[in-house]
Image 1 (cartoon, one colour):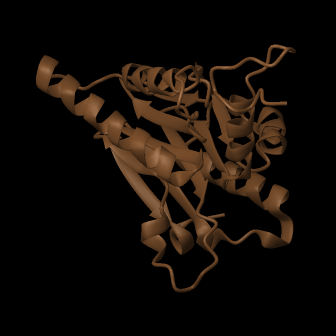
Image 2 (cartoon, rainbow, N blue to C red):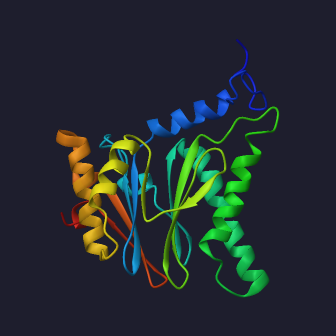
Length: 224
């Protein structure tokens, strides 16, 4: 009783309950898949907006951080927006200070530091979001940072709803020599297998980073 009232308090079994609640929040969010290709990185995001009154573009969760970096989130979108703005500021500051493009890892490291800080400060709750960053610095890279502030580099990964099912399928089907079109087809086929009758290609957004250039594709433009 009471061990979940502050992010600074450990439960007797060594868990920080506020952090675990935030992780559960992430798994309630719409899913996204990141896939590393032979010369690109692809992020496929489920918009999951069913209200016909909403303008689709306003619900796009794939954000441009810099000319060669994109990011997507799962969990509380408003929390993610703060981190996206922080990432953009970090990238801009790097360009002003060093007159060069920031590496994807240097940006995500600063975001991870912010997320970690909010797991140990009193009077604040952890960010209820995980983020996936795709970038190109001489080679394509894919990183994921979780609510604890821990970040890792991946060949392919998933965040959000049904992430464990998606990652299991990625382990079975992923190969290192995928083109951007093959990566999109793989991601959408996995979503179709996991979502079943609820699958609809119109509700997906795709971001591609290839040789430092960003391309976004949505809905009916996608090929499956």
